[in-house]
Image 1 (tube, rainbow, N blue to C red):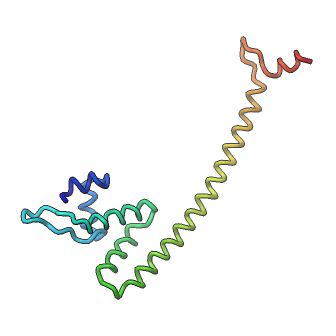
Image 2 (cartoon, helix red, strand yellow):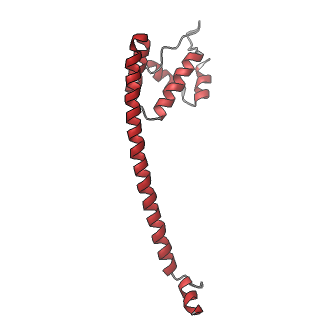
Length: 139
């Protein structure tokens, strides 16, 4: 599969694909007789994996290390697993922090909404009957 097709498939630029290969984030892509990159299904799986991990916030340096370990063979399985376990721990911590931040934002929004409602009830708009005026007329 040519770079333009892979770029479109994963919605990333050809320059990004070349960069990922240049820095070792994805294994070296084979070339056709004309020297043009020809991405295999395996290459696409790597790209998908890298994009997923990057989307989760994993650092490029860690992913380069992981790819390097993978290329060294089966003797690095435990090291790769340990690397992923550590990243999982860090991701869980970030999720906890984000959940706490989300709760604080929700509380702050609720506070604003409550204050806005209170303020709006006291506002007098020219030409309109205010809710407070209605309640005093009904008495």
